[in-house]
Amino acid sequence: MTTPTFSATAAPCPAVTASVPLLDPPGWAVAQRQLFDLLDRAWRRCEPDSKVFSNWPQLYLLGGAEDLLTACERHWERVAGRPTGRFPRGESPLTFHFLCMAAPERWREHAIGFAELCASARTDAGRRARSGVQDAAADFAAAGLVCNALLMSGQDRYRERIAERVGTWLDRAAADGGVLPDNAAMAGALAAVHATGDASYLDAVRLTLDAIIARGRTAQLSAALDIPVPHGPFPREDHGWFDVHPMLTGIPTALWHHSAATADRQRLERLRAGSGYDWCTMRPIRSEEEAGHEEPWLAFLCGDDPGYPERVLAAAQAQVRHRLARMDRYRDRETGPANGQADSRADSLNWQRSNPVVTEALVQLTWGGPQVVSDGGLQQARVRYHDAEARRPGLPPSVAALVSGIDRHATLVELVNLDPERPRAVIVQAGAFGEHTIGEVRHSLCDDPSRLGGYGPGLPAPTVTTAVRRVDGPYLRIDLPPSSLIRLSLELELRTRTPSYRTPFDAREEGS
Image 1 (tube, rainbow, N blue to C red):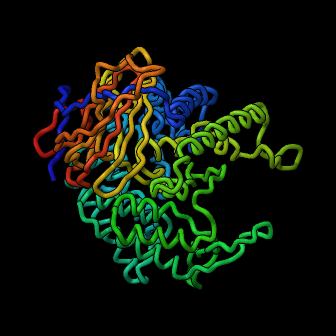
Image 2: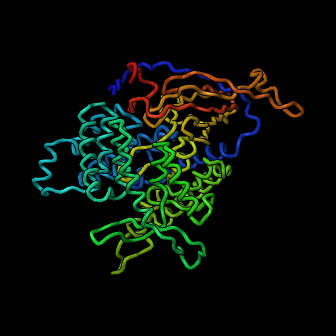
Image 3: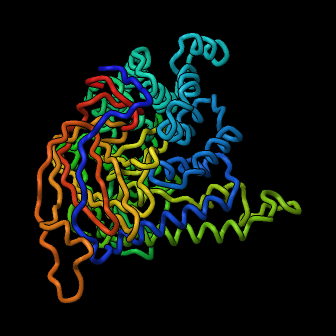
């Protein structure tokens, strides 16, 4: 693999100009920009603590306000910048990973330093001297920190360290029936795939999932529900599997999204067929990972729920407003014991439950990816965006995006410029880390672009056709005149390039 190089001069990329006039803005596009506006107001309402702002730099990468990145950097330095234990090293770096994606040059030194906690033989020796010979699943998840430094620097020693650490855990799993603990398996396996290009690391995730599914049983979820729901055991100790819960689809969804393999898609289809409920059902929930809507999203991608984008955006808005109200309710209350009794309504977890930034809907709809795996995971995406004018990651103001299909050879994207006066320019990036190649793009084309502004009552709608353009690279620039839209069908060649934190504003060596 080629080591990425960075410079201040942007490399050229193919460009396409949108020519279809925006006659009637789609509801999802209006709702998406409303959510961006609400989130920009919401994060300014609180001073976060620890996990509460783990997805704030993710919002910046999606297209959040420019000063949000500065706030994230300040908060990270204050409260979350020094995790050294096994579990914090595995879970808490989500904020850090996103900061590195957003501003790689500023965070390079930090990325290398944190990787040394996991990749240095000297550090390992010191830890063994203090703690004895031991390991934990969170160390497997911490492979994400080392992969973060690899994406930043391209240094082969990090690649080797990831392969060594993940390989050690796979050997342990093989001796135990192929089962790995927790969703650390997904985070560690993806780090190894990014580092080595060897997709067989994902087999460890498949073995664990299939072991859980094989030991599952169908049970009634509660007395209020008469529909049996499949349950699966999650923890396992020496005495066997225990603590049966309803099956969750986050990890199998992330697995299929990365691999695009038929067998991984079929596993999801079997889970859906045996679920006992309609996957188009939208529930107003948010898990600790700020996720939980994989099932209706998958139904949407299958073409079964065309109304999902507007419904999930409405649910996200409702969640933001609920959390803002919750913050106001508890803002001046003391937490913990009061008068000798614990106040369960204002406990120490309230601020974790009150993060006013929700990103799952935007990740699914704009990037065409699942929410990031919480235990040290790295973001997955079919596409990301950069504002060509502002030279920063994320959608430009007034631009909305919808990924409506992520088949192996066709990623369907719609871009809309809602601004009636200002043109916008978006650079579409293939993959979260530029690891895919856009072979060609099929895009919508108006038969007469000069008719922009000439349509109206009594006039027929403009005829829209399709044109084809070769790209053969990770970036495609889309110029959006005022009140315009474009539909793209991207032929993506998955994982054909070296993943890195490079941006379209960096010149790159050939093959990087």
